[in-house]
Image (cartoon, rainbow, N blue to C red):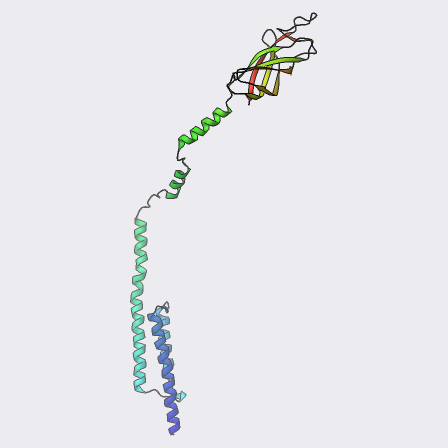
Length: 251
């Protein structure tokens, strides 16, 4: 009889110790914010009732709970209920805040969007810091590509009806030596109508303000044409032509 009573008391203490440890662990986790009470009030009441049932030992199990232990368990359960009520009271306050915010947002008219600062920065960066430098470079490029048509002029031209080659003399009107010439020779009849043209390039050295001659294919040799200032054919004295020189480029 003594051993049975002793075993009952020891079993009761073990169960009570386990329940107290679980309750203490739950309280610590709740205070640290690791446990959130998201359950409905009905589920929470059922959970509390389950804890009460588990903490109470029926007579059929062969264990008894002392009054002091039972009072301690009741105090723990009351404390848990009190905390649940506090959570219920605090929950509507947190849910009412978004509604008020939503109402204020609905009443407030939408503000016009401001232009992004990034686009302004990009526009500023794309603007040249010194526009005068760009104009200067463009002016230099234009000056380098522009050719003075009077840099080289036709000084003399000779082509009679016997020879196939004409003698062309060009005058250098610049203050530098010219070593390359690209030009066009245009042929006209005596009435000023254009007959033909010929493009040519020559590697030639002409000193400043000097005249240099070179050979170039004459116009209409097979038809016995001749330059109007040169010797013409006795049988075709009317086959004369004039020339015009156009400068395309030079070095």
